[in-house]
Length: 151
Image (cartoon, rainbow, N blue to C red):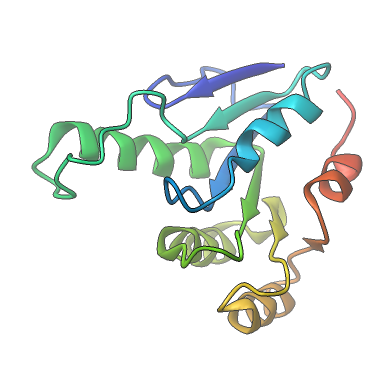
C-alpha cells in the first residue's frame, strides 16, 4: 500500500482510492488513518487529502496559492481515482463532503463507496442521492474495505 497526501500526485490512476469525507480538524475522527491501517498489506494507492502541513490560517480564496493547490489536488484526485471512499462523520457538518458527493454522483456514481452513519445531520439527503444514483452504502469502514477488490 502506498499513501499519498496533498499536494503529491499519483502517476497511475489504476488501483487508487481517494479518501473523500469529513476532515473538520479537531471535530472529525481521523478515519483516514483507520483506512490506511486496514489496507496496509494491499497494493492500493491511497490519496489522502488530510494534509500533514495544513495551516488553518490559509485564506480560503482562489488567490491563496496553498489553498488553491489543495482544492485542485482534491478535485483531480476525485476525477482520477478508481474508487472514491466517502465518509460522513456524524459529529461534523462536512459541507465539502456533501459537495463531493454531488460532484461524483453526477460524473461517475459507480466509483463511489459511501458510509453515512445514523446521526449525520443530512443523512436523509445522502440516502436519497445514493438511492437515486444507485450508489452503494456501507455500515462501517470495515464492511466497505471487505468489499474492495483484493489487489
